[in-house]
Length: 152
Image (cartoon, rainbow, N blue to C red; front, side, top):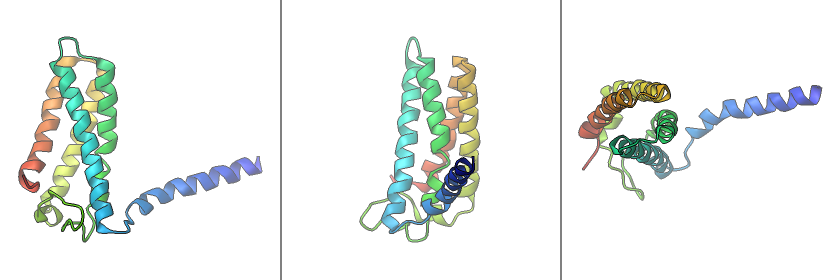
């Protein structure tokens, strides 16, 4: 029993250290790659949902998987916006400098997390019309950030 508790305690300590470790990027380029990867993942799954919603017979299970992945991934990019990662360097970035200074960015990020949480909940409910409506609201939130804080 003691070994089990020790193993559990060590595992929990390791899990608690992960968020702090994720913020320690060796180079600004690592932070850029990190946040870009999260955005690629979210974009891919938004595209998958969009494709299903346009299909004659949408695959609800595929929509639900993608919605869950998007909800998880939406919490990741913020960790990659660290000092020094605004320039790009060896890794090009489409983030405008304002994304690092404008306080509205945090609001939009919070709104995005709210919308993707709703999307995941609606997807679990299985109503395609409701999913379609919430997908549109989620997309509007994505677009508001792209329009203001992403270089074309």
